[in-house]
Length: 487
Picture (tube, rainbow, N blue to C red):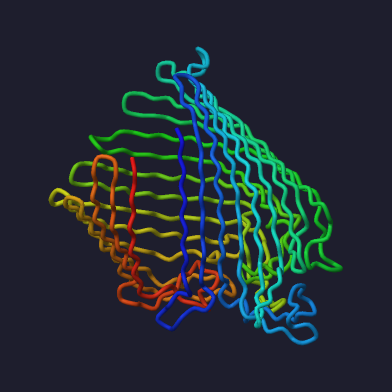
């Protein structure tokens, strides 16, 4: 089998009810190709993907103040102050993936699957000056190799399962006058397993994972950190995660599901070693090389129903974390950027999600949904930052022949539970509409679609956005799409 795909999209600066948001433009392109051979017992495939993107960073030009004397490449402004026009993020990524599997491996193992994945990624924060010159403020380069192997056990009566291994090797490099961390090598390895016990009406699952991660910075200097700043040091983390779950059939189409989990997460290298301006987040980020690993315990329960005319699901969850890592606004400003410091506290998350669908007639559904999260820093008894508010959704889903229409009303409550230094966000109601028509023949399909978003051109802001206080969400817009598929 051979396959290939490609796509590209360009957008200009988006408009909001308060005006155009300058430098919110984007340019994206990607393509890929691959081949595979699938025999009776052995299967393999190779796939290559390439992505290229250019994203404007709104308001960055107002927050950064540089002269060409400190910006290599601004030749047109030599000897005089360079006016910064805009800042953009330019990224490119090449991904190579190889997969191999074999069936009927032995009496004990039904199959073995191996996946090898290598990604070469480059990301540049580019400053564009009036007159057409530009300079790279920061460049990120990363080579990452991930491998994963899974043995599928041959099912014996009511018992089945799988176990395997996973590993990562990552080379992370940051260069430029605004480099915010040292170069870091990361190595990780894990082994995991999952066992299933399937009875007539109930299924039990038990899983575990043991992992280790090692970070080796190639320099003790952390970005813009000077005297008195904790140096970058080697760190190693080893821990285990485990989970147990149950799926119980209650009635025809109905089920009760519950899971308990103990989670372990090592801090990321950005949380450990960053110290400097991060234009993409419009923040001056300060990591902490002394961070401990996160651990947590949680339980979630779910009630599900699926029938011809009705469907629904109710989910509830509770998670308690020790040493939870999150970014905190300190109230300080550095390089005209807000200072964000990665810290860790004990935390608690509770929440719920519910969806209900009713079908009074064939091809017509009325859909209702809601979700809610409450997250608290239990050390100070204050809400955690950037937590979305209570949200609800009401929609209609109607199909007839090749025609499909789906209007949706999205309502969000005001978010008044805010962390120190965080501002509240007003509630909103937004109406979206999706419609399409599909024309299919034996080997080709044509689809014409239109998406209308924020039909009422309402002014609203996303509480989890880094720039919500500077820019609202997009205003009324329409997207037309034509798609042709061969099969």
